[in-house]
Image 1 (cartoon, one colour):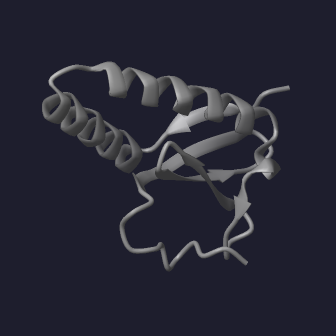
Image 2 (tube, helix red, strand yellow):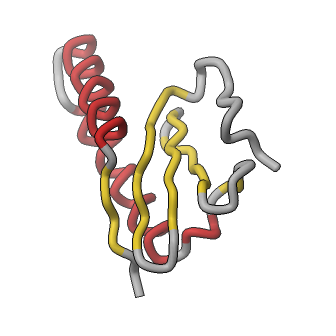
Length: 99
């Protein structure tokens, strides 16, 4: 059974900024649509099996990689909350390092 998925404010703002950047830079929304498709597929998988993702220093926070982006989320027995999405090329996350 899939867990309920919620999108945090930071995640939605970051995703909007990423999609707008690529739309403007590329002059089309092709990359953005591909990114959204891959992201939704990955979120569907982790909503069913959150432990297939990479662990962090916190037991309830994990992350996945999607098309060069790090997606951080929190989960419990009832829901998954998408916390953040950022480029994997930037400096590494210190708060959520792998164990």
